[in-house]
Length: 326
Image 1: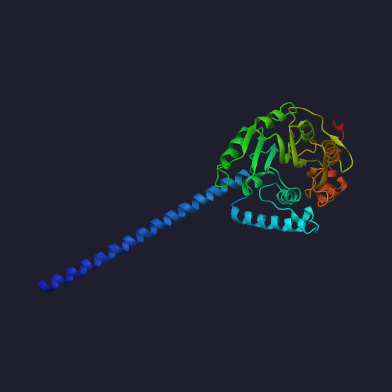
Image 2: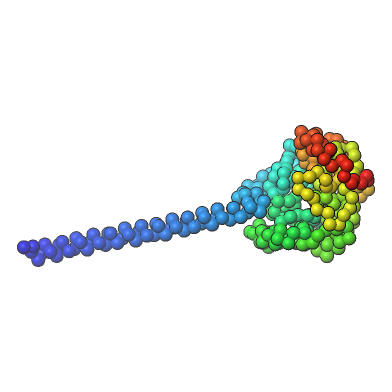
């Protein structure tokens, strides 16, 4: 028979064992909870990135590296200008942070060359304002912006996006409206963006020529205008004005040629300084700016990429449709 002393010793050992077991259980429970939090955090981050990616934004890139790269480039361009050395070509500086292609890099180069007066931009037909030509300026450079688009859902999405950490203090203004020659000036003026601005971007997939022609309440230093390459660099043509024009995706019947845009630019006091490599976004600067650092180029200099030749191969599909010579 077990003696009293042995029973006491055994129960003491059992109690110590239970305490150790309870401590181990508590530790495992805490570890499991921390891992559950981590899994929840990772899942939430993945869902956030998926949502951002689905809107067309740059998927999951942290803004810090973007900003650091652009600060270094700004200082480099400034040094080149101050020491009288030539600036790099557009092809060498194309970068995409939020633009559809390499427009972000070109715009940064142009801004350093022509300078700014207000850091204000206007973008017409900006979609959701996330993948567009001015988003990088709004997010990484602290600009004030007006984003206009006819899509109600796109504008709602854009407003939500710009409540994010980079821009919630000073988000861009959104205007939801179908832009016509009759209302474009009113839309800009009502938003308080008339007068001197630093950049205007026009990308309407159709009525670009007519809207820029009608827009006279702003005086931008830089203009980015969409052009079509199907007619090549020499024909000065645009689709006729139609207030309710809608581009049929996949067709080449829309917009104006780069020659037409150059003629309009000249009438408004601007000159062509280059284009994005595929030729469908042309860049103009005001005649009185950066003449020593940004040489004027010809339309044919902007349509040399193989993609431009492929665009011209589609001419037979649209050449017999209505066009206006300007």
